[in-house]
Amino acid sequence: MAKRNRRPRSDAPPAGARPPESGYWLYGLHAVAAALANPRRRFRRLALAARDGLPADLLALLERRAAADGVRIEPVDRPALDRLLPADSVHQGLAARVEPLPEPDLDDRLDELADQPQAVLLLLDRITDPHNVGAILRSAAAFGAAAVILTERHAAPESGSLAKAASGALEHVPLIRVGNLARALESIKAAGFWVVGLAAEAERTLAEVIEPGRVALVLGAEGEGMRRLTRERCDLLARLPTGGPIGQLNVSNAAAVALYEIARGRPAA
Image (tube, rainbow, N blue to C red; front, side, top):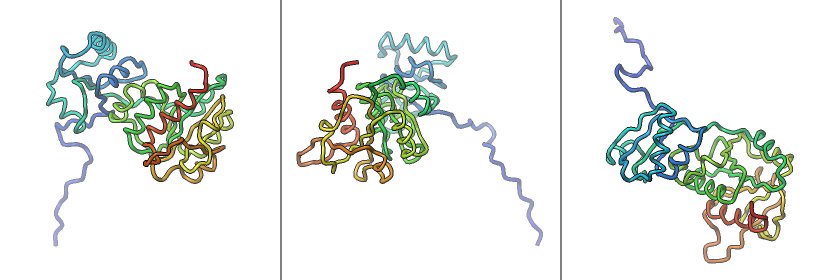
């Protein structure tokens, strides 16, 4: 039987098709405004539904950054903006297509903190919900944490929903990804940090064990908590003094309470 001639396969997109856009969409006034003020951000597109509803200072910042980066401000109506973004995105009429931020290196950040006797690091073990990571970043910014550290795998990626939950904090707090959290903890301990793991079953509360100095606070995923190797690298475990009918907080709320407890006994920055 004669074989039919087959056209060679090609992975190239069809003629006239637009190549996929790089980066992701940021949306909402706080997230976009913080990105516009961050010189490390790289913009691909800027979409604006209504100039009238934008604060004058934010509009001026938007126009300056668009001119500096050579990016056109695209006027769109709200339904068109809705179609650009994930479903149920609260965009407030403003969105920006951006590249992910350059990822900082843990060793470099530890070197930058070498002369700071008071510093707090947050480490997240398998926290995959971008809303939780974003809310933790916001608390980290509010309480002056030096970095939030998570793993390259089994962790929330940088995204619009994470940035929206962070309300601008993504542009201010270094978000550091490491290949192995247990090894990262060894480097952190060698840099003079005291590692405290937050665990509901711990005997003592965080207030009972916390001391002035350099602290690395470790939080695990809700339900499962920290992995065994992560737990073994902690200098000690501590809990929050919850005692109501619901014994555990959402991980982002637990991070906020723990950061407040650490900050409470320290001089104001």
